[in-house]
Image (tube, rainbow over all chains, first blue to last red; front, side, top):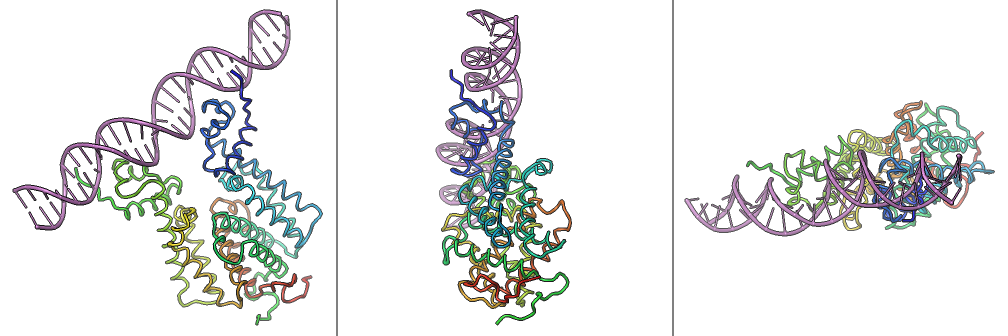
Length: 201
Length: 201
DNA sequence: TGGAGTTTCCTAAAGCCCTTAGGCAAGCGG
DNA sequence: CCGCTTGCCTAAGGGCTTTAGGAAACTCCA
């Protein structure tokens, strides 16, 4: 009988497609075997098991997302860079919901260290070079950026913003505007007031 | 043989405990049956199935979290309210990681509408009464708050902030400070600049 | 070209989980 | 005290994961 041409790489790619179509939690050896018209046990020659498969998909998606981020950041700085990078996250999550969910898979420390996670952090730090922040404030700001990007995209994906006005697109633009304003106007660490103490209104 | 005294409510509570101990995805009819020293099929008299069980736990956790938020908000306003409410989210997620994960379970529209989700949104709107924001900016700000709270807590839970200085506690405090500063200094909608056009540096 | 060897995929089987159907007995209401 | 409701049980079907071992397909070198 003809061989199906299985490969760890092909399994990962098919798994990523399956994740986008049916959800990351539906990515299982069984489902993948059906997709390749192959018996389940055959996958175990290429992949250690279900957990290994999911981990590989997560690493693949992290890498893909980091590549897109790097492309978006090239030649941009300041708010332009911030906006482009933010849109990469959101667009990726909307275009590839299963892959995006995969990037949230908890990895064991060794795997996480070898993943593209570090590239993501480095890119956020690079964006912050366009603003005037020194350590440790820069790290706090990196964490805030990560929180907003992931939080917004995640709430949007679970339908949180879809059933009320104004539209999510509009909120997203305003949220990015607000982040830019905040980074330009980052409050001083010790002082409870913001740097420009002129109460609004 | 003596009866175990099963009840939908008792199953939900035990399920919430199990989620906190082993993770929300480990909450299954089997695991719960073991915990009650009962055969799996016995649960089906009280709960429709695995999905129903998880949904009930999600609703329970949403309610519990909303109750804590309401208690924290009582008698507070402005940054005081913002900080207290933010800490409720973070503390709940740290204290009850499985329950917190449960609150992220996607609900079908009908269930979601009947959930405590609306209370959460209302409380965020209440916090924003302490700041000077009109619609639609208030809605954008609500979405930003939700994104930051969920995003931070979620990244922290998956270990994102644990292996680098400064500590997560410190970043959290600065993130809340920054949010407060941002809400007091919310950028004007149409203008690309912030309301106090004095380029930093 | 024709094996030897490796790789790919298969069958078989064990273990766990979810779910439904139908039965027996415990405990409550009259 | 007896019938009835209800709670928990056994039985069984079907799916997913994983391991063990076999047979066919490809490769490559003599």
